[in-house]
Length: 357
Image 1 (cartoon, one colour):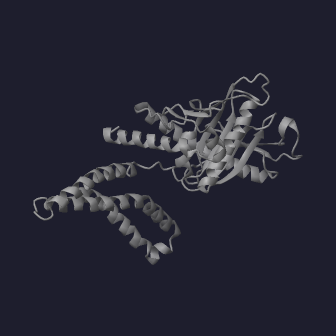
Image 2 (cartoon, rainbow, N blue to C red):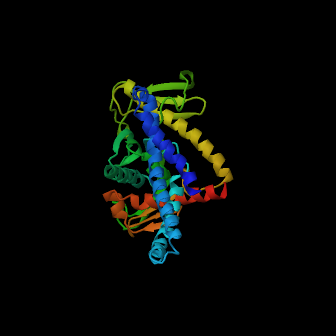
Image 3 (spheres, rainbow, N blue to C red):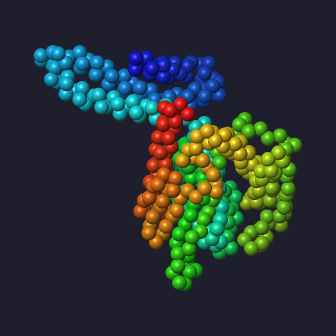
């Protein structure tokens, strides 16, 4: 019974392997890419399925030997090891078979914005950017600043970065929300702890096929880009602001000296934001039926507190508290927070699947 449920995954994997070796597929890049991606997604399930079938068959063989005078005792000992192992493997494959988020493999735009706390908030935007950059370095991801707006006393009022690499969205999608920091600012003479906050948005990068924006739906404004404190950084109208008229969503880029380059960047950001708005609408409908603790992505939701005096990070959604702030902020050890979030989200998804919601 168990083998019959798992065999179709193995058969499909073998079928794809055969197809990929044919000249027809080798000459069709699009089809080859699709099949390779499907095979890659199937591989962990297939490996686990083969292991489960092997253990299940070993259990059956040992059960048949239980009455044997010579091998009965040995079979009993092996069953004591194999049966718990089978239960463990079955739980593991359940997680692997949770429907995959279609955005998990995408690169992302990470948008960091200063909130309450003025200059201190802008400084924390910079600190958070460094935290994500160090984490990205550990995973071999590439980080590129798309747009920046500097704070009056350092840091950034707003920062948009593009992070490219393997499964970036799957790791960082739970970072969206309000991040609160508690620490003594450098300018504080009384040694008092101040609380400030920034907001983080995590937006998957999308292709032209995934979101269709008609040229007539875009309003473009050009203006002269400016630096910190109104200081002119360009003498031409190279900064570009694009507005998606049906939704009112805006993307403005001024970092490049070329208007053409700024427009290209702004268009990519605009498409990602429109896609995210559509995705958010779908998630809101889902949340009406079943509220998930992790992954709502609401930017107004306070998700995490960074307490510097106590070297403490608390993720409020799952009640996680760790005393490793320096390791997370300065050594890229963000997996100490992200891995428990992913495990919690998987447990929620598994529970939902089993209850039929």
